[in-house]
Length: 339
Image (cartoon, rainbow, N blue to C red):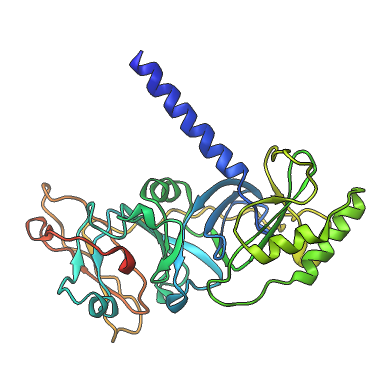
């Protein structure tokens, strides 16, 4: 009986996760038609994973604060580091002012169980877990993209090194559902970009309504644009009608009534995943011009295997990890200074 109950709970959890993915507004960004593609929408605080042009997973994330913004633009997924040791950047050491320079793998590590490089190493960007799950989603990191640790592990095991990753900034999502109703969500402007093109958005709404013979109250659109709650709002539903099926984005940035389509690309060349060697630690040095990889010495058979990569910092070098006997110390990371 106990096993059946646990199975029902697990099934319910999976169903809820699938429903959350289906009900998440999708941004107007073209994924590549072949291979994997990561899309992170800063105002929405969501990471979208596409496979062969189809949305396969959505994760809540915490992104950089206004003072330490996550770099917008096109990047690539790089090396993965499981059970990383965090060598704290000097800038954050100064901010913390507690004398702690490194944090070993474990429940107190702000990088969680895995760190996945994103973009040029000089940017210091990564996607990683956290020891403060309540901070996700949010706008509160030092620039990296933070995930709940179970999500980070799942993502790291799914994503392939070399896959494209796009960090975008869209304050609106215009979607249709399986009932051919039109849904709109709008978001706040954490980086003060002021880039919401309301003219193109209204043009797309009008074009879609005309093409499908539907009437949309402009006051309803105005209310959603004003409130920016992040909630999905139906523009064409009768009262009480619920969203049905998965959402699909309209190409509203161009004022189109058509759905956003994948970008045609050649089949990607197979790339072997990059995983840093066991026994490495991160050393952040503000005087270093570029990251330098230094092989770690062979560790005793009894020592734990530790793989690490730098957190956000423009310059970094790698050094051998300290003996396991010297690694663990009592430490608690304040939530607001998490990386």
